[in-house]
Image: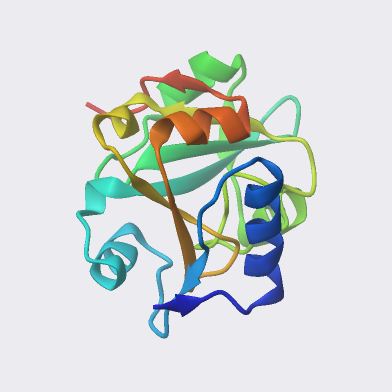
Length: 161
């Protein structure tokens, strides 16, 4: 683990500081693209990873970003009910265009276009969670309350039963 040097991770770092968070974006030599990879690199449980799952709103064509606990499968039906529209799959080009990030590095902040954002209420069971910082090698820690504050998103039940 080392301080971030990638320009995208540094942009996320600056956004976090603008939001008043005194947290450090860190980079790893190994990938942190999946919840399992990130947990192994960080040394935490998979559940403590705040993974970003991106859908495409069928009517709005807007990105719907779900920040979910790493051990949860996201229920598309529940998310659709929370955002008020049916959802479709988001391919790599859509994710990059609408969020500004590559799959495996989608941060909960700093999207290039407006997105609908939903936070998995299961993240609230932890004191600290780890979110992607714009690249498949970078992450940052924060408290769930800080996640709400910097995203202005609401908690929701998104876990697939």
